[in-house]
Image 1 (cartoon, rainbow, N blue to C red):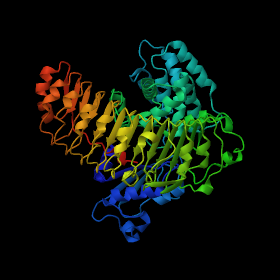
Image 2: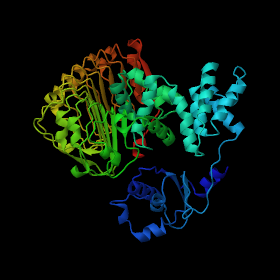
Image 3: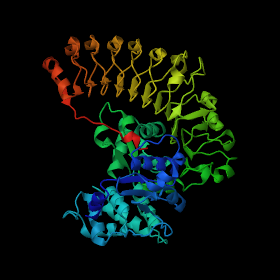
Image 4: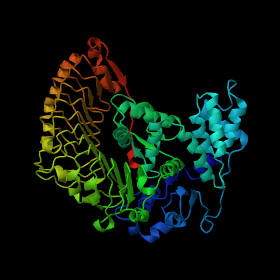
Length: 605
């Protein structure tokens, strides 16, 4: 096996990076050099001494860098390292004869190979089953023209379908014969037939995937939330659509989401979705059939330094888009122009910069229900024009990622319909320290608060305990968080409390035991937690506790045996011993010993 031999030759010093059309080249170069040199770079890539880049790491042996999905010669020139012993393997739809010495063109699959791939997707085996119409199966597979992704997607779409549906698929595919010889054009035309036969809402959910940047993980929580808002789905139905799209090979679930995210108390923040760039192209192709102002989804296909010119040409007429997705670098006030989105319910702002001016047209989006801001830059971003938020009376969910929150003012206009706030990789401490804002007045209907990987968070403001509508609080990977508010027990509607991977947390406030509606408690990976409140047994509705890797927890409160609704405890082997007595008196209790799991996938992006 050639690849195994190469791995041995390079002594496992093989580094892989997906580039894509919207690549942040500085970030990719920095990441690759840190992996190659085994050193963290402080400052910018251009501050690394030239002689160091030319010589490479000392005495480290040969290096192989694999660059996938490269779109231009200029990208490649930026990313090729030229020190002795470094080889670069490039995967691209294009050829680069001036820079790449050898090129291997991937061939389409032959008839037998294609049929095997098709049957694996359609029947779960590599050949045509005896019960199937062999001639018809071969005809449909042949219409895929040896394109591997088309074989997988179309095959999966016909799984368990009657012969009449197979015949219909064959006829649709044969009518889609392309006048172009482009593999990509043929692929889009053939795969569109599989998407068209999906039920209405499933098809619309697939098309929504094109609104996210290429080659980036899509947070599962964002995706499910958008589907719930604009397609009037409840959470179980949205998850069922996710699984259907996954089973049809139209998206890929990351972090074993297929098995884990379906748990009743799963935190969708832990999971994400990816999509093959050709499938994203298909979603954009199908969404772009209407004229620009009539499209249901208005999307920038790739990152650009300014808004598209055709948007500016059409700005005098209202855009009827339900979802608007913008992907840029830094944006100043002068970079925006006024646009009207009377029907927009979702706005996704993707960018890469340390400063970002919010567009003024946000204030006119009166039907906006979900606002998503994701910063793909290397440092946290400061937002300007925050006053744009104050008129969003219908806003129901807000997702901020890698944003520096400003100090909270004492009072502001209430966001009276906001139900959900998610803060991921944000800098919060300056905004929360000493804040006197009455959060219950600002967010009177907030039901879900999530704070993840906000490493400077030391404490929650006490006024959080006045938001009586809160049903779920999730605090994860907040390494400086030492304690929870003393009056947390005032949150009488709280049913889910997650405080995991917060190593500085050393105790839970006793008032936690007053949370009569609490059903799920997660304290996993709180390695300095030494005990639980004595009156834990008062949580008579508690159904599940996750307490993995709480290594300093040596005992349980005596009242634990009173947790009559408790059905599931997830913990380490040592902690499981502590639950033996409770198992004797709690009839349906199941204690599950979990394997240690360290998830660093969030570092990838």
